[in-house]
Image 1 (cartoon, one colour):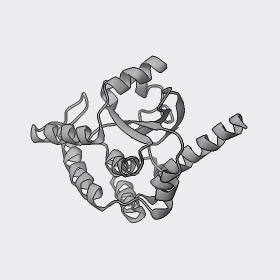
Image 2 (tube, rainbow, N blue to C red):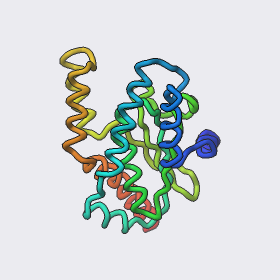
Image 3 (cartoon, helix red, strand yellow):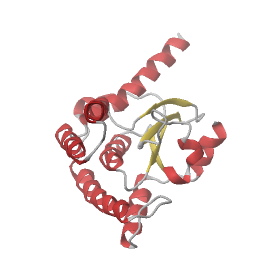
Length: 208
């Protein structure tokens, strides 16, 4: 597993590099990923608009800024993503804002289709759902936790709808986008920082 992580990090992008890659591919009429379809290009174009908006409007809450300032360890956040993924377009800007607010978080992004071996280690109910965040100890590359593909309320929204209707179709996707819009990234911030706080407490308990 250590080799898988290290190879992924070697082939990773910063957030800025990822944004530039997705934008460049769109200008060429392409999406990220090994499959090229009209639908995936369309989703990538929609996501590009979302990313631009969220990069400008998302803010880290004061409470979470305090938590970020109190982080006493360095972390690498390795995220598996693709440019056509709607959830990734909502969540990557949040992760980036949190990482920008801390000298102790280094955000790296890899493409799912180019990192199948890594993706297969972090399946969700047997599927390659993204985005998937892998939290690493920056000094050792030890896996501390993983998170994704959605914050808990969004996960529940989709799961409940699928249980009732048997499918994930356009109406619930619209509801999901509404939820993200209303939440303004706060739930994701809280869940991600809770992971780090839990690890910090567990590490302190071991030391004590």
